[in-house]
Length: 586
Image (cartoon, rainbow, N blue to C red; front, top):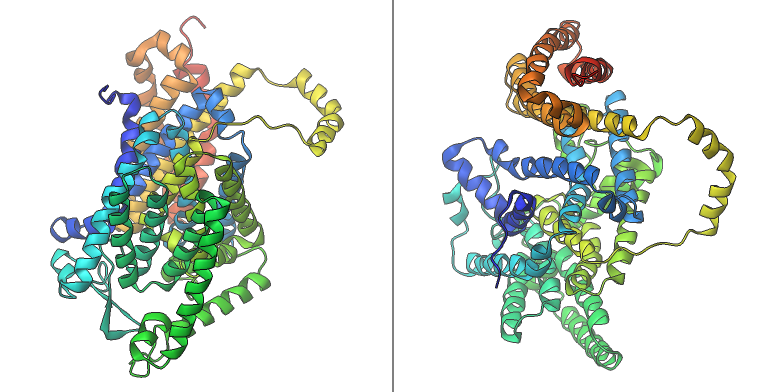
């Protein structure tokens, strides 16, 4: 058996595997480490930092491989991903322009609605050429699932309710150490190492669906399924129970023969009738009311969770109907808690949250993306693609009644596996439709004009790479600035200095090795840096003058960064091309 290749080319593969394994423990580890290191907010951003690095790496890899671009961006699924991200960014600008959300709420809302598809696309890009990830996904899923389920059972049956408080859990500061049903202090819900009972239930439902399709010994499969079902039960997550039934039904359709499916259907109907009869006969039992309805006559809650769910769903539907354009990220859902411009809006549904923030168009594109994802998975023959297809429908049901895809654990776990599942499916050539053929024929005159006047391919590619460096500089620098200035409250000048150092370094690498690699290689790093460093330092005066001047005029430094970036797009292109990276021969 050959050893695993640990070359630098495999770094993204290793990072993806690490994120998949550690995702269920992310909430616990961030709270625990913050209990003796501090900086809880910074620790919570570790997965997003990895995502940022991998996203930039994925863009670079796509820029160097036309085959990879065809398999990903060239597909319908890839185009829907890009369309959704463009809509999210445009709605962010719209929300900022309309002053609908404060800066923190805006960026947090944008993160919540784009993180799933970005992580999916990143894993998809790296998993296409990763035979190791495709062959080891079962181990990456099974072992963490067993640990999480076992701890949930022990937590509910054995451990005291405040056990997690010894690891830094604290209500209002990090994560509540124990949650109850409908604020009833007598009925504790298991949450294991996740952020709460509902994320735990969703994670277990996904795990059970994947275990059912795994090619592992039957005894191991039974242990995993039984442990996960028990943990799912003590989470008291009704949305996860509903999703579990949907996952089991779809898995049965995908795996069983017609004869087995018919027998299973009859057994299921009989079991459902028996269950309904038992529920009806015990409808006045306090224990059953707690378990199923999350309420009882002895509850101390002023409003039941059922009433809160119904009110939130009704209100969000009214918002979507009356505001077809949406208000922009940060104006609804979990992010709206940080919105200083308006009151928070709770929809209790990830889909309705998108509708409130991105409007009808954004919600429509996201649903189209999910439908296309289901179609692609249905064409796959691997066990992973079948498992992800089944869990997609189950998670769809869960997200109708919760913010499951806003939870980092579920995002990095399920969407990462979804990207891996799509990567296992060979790309298929698509025949042009009649509409596409007609459009191609009608645009022939325009394409002829373009062929006569189009810029050279080399210059166009160079300009794209140059802008990629600018994007890397801006995104990385802006992220660091938001973290230091917006989150940690540092002085804007110190935050800007550190952000620039990070941005400069990354931008130089992109320009040297991608945009101007031929001319830069002829000069060498020493000759280029002699021009690049003084030029960058001179730009500091201009950049800080723009940001500081606008700040003196009462305009936020966040806006100043946008103005500065637009100016330097043109400014730097001219100097880079005609002086800094210019070939000595020219």
